[in-house]
Amino acid sequence: MRNYTHSVVFIKNEKDEILLGIHRRGPFVGKLNGFGGKLEPGETLVESAYREVQEETGLEIINYQHVANIYSALGEKQLLIAVLLCNNWSGTPLSETAEMQDIQWYRQNDIPLEQMLPDNQQWLLRVLNGEELTIELSFGDDLKLSECKISELQKSSI
Image (cartoon, rainbow, N blue to C red; front, side, top):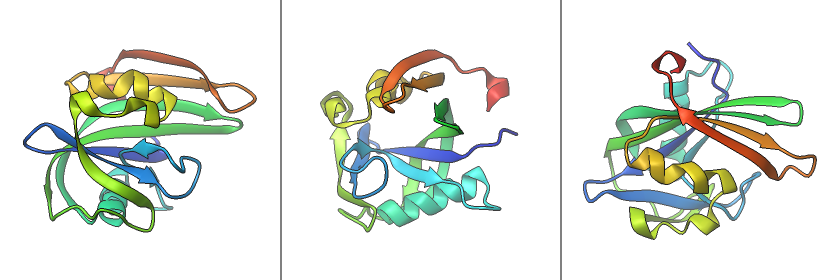
């Protein structure tokens, strides 16, 4: 079992549309993204993902697929982020919550990637189309993305 620090969940409906929202606060304010965040002390990856999705969308995850791992170093912080794809949930998504706004469904070909984090622009469509990836991110002193290495996810790394 890996020591995950964060999760991000992308929710896909039966029309192959993806639910995304814009962050209201935190380091990703103003950026379009999936739903997730930091694991709380004592919380498992699954518990964190379910809690974050419920808080940020009003939906309850029924099941998910683990599609990618993101390894990232931000200064002294080492992050391991699990990327999950959810095709089965209950409820109706809210249009906004305390943490997210403009929550809406996007056709895969119409996702405004330029509104997302720079690394998401490089791998999101690949995982939505069934690839399982390992993503390694490096940042410069200015905290801007300097490198994004993408490789096939090894099943032993889930």
